[in-house]
Length: 92
Image (cartoon, rainbow, N blue to C red; front, side, top):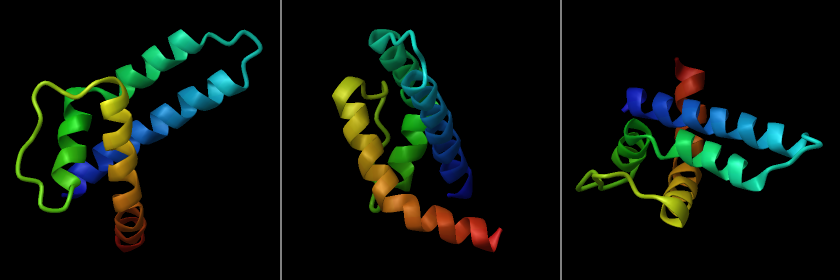
């Protein structure tokens, strides 16, 4: 479970960095920013890890979900696992 958590947290950190770069850019390209975010968050290992972290996860999606489904799945996983990530980082 720790491996999956690390995978998801690293992806979220990379996505946050891309979003920050977009927000601080004078030459904003929303389509490119979204493509970069999807490229980070829609990687198979990230989707699988997020699914495995869900309480009572019964299956792993294949192929990874895309677009708004990914955003919803990511938000759900992040909100549920925020406390777990903090607890594990303190205990590591």
